[in-house]
Image (cartoon, rainbow, N blue to C red; front, side):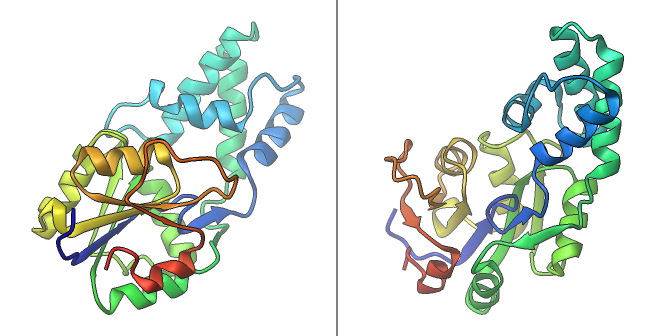
Length: 225
């Protein structure tokens, strides 16, 4: 892929922004209130969420289904997991997010030269609050909520939906994301160049992205140019 780029697609969670409180922080509160020892953590929650969701589902319903199953598997019964899920929803302020270092600068700089879109694994109810909290809800020409408007990344369909709405060919777009499993793999499946925000642990990425940035500040240099 050596053609010119006119569109930059972004992931949201852990790429442009992070929660001020982690999933594990909130789960600790929920387990304590229910009065049970923790029987799953944030990594399992995120890793298995796709098992319980179909396109169009509300994240709150999906979370209840997931936590109910986790509780049942641990011998507590589904009602315990559903109670934990409801506490989690009450505690999780979707606007309580912060830009990752360099994100705001990168968005401002790239918006002057490129068409800007977003492909995010997350439903509109949740992601719109984050964008509003960051004050960037109007920065994107298109926002595709994978898991709602289309299957979750790494399925190529959410990328195709975004490109179709923009009227852009896949070989003229790049996608910026932090996840090798969903962002890099999904972009490649869609024929889009990948820009991986490295995790900093020094491991060799698999699959190998087309471009690697150590910081979002590096996007200003347009590594695909």
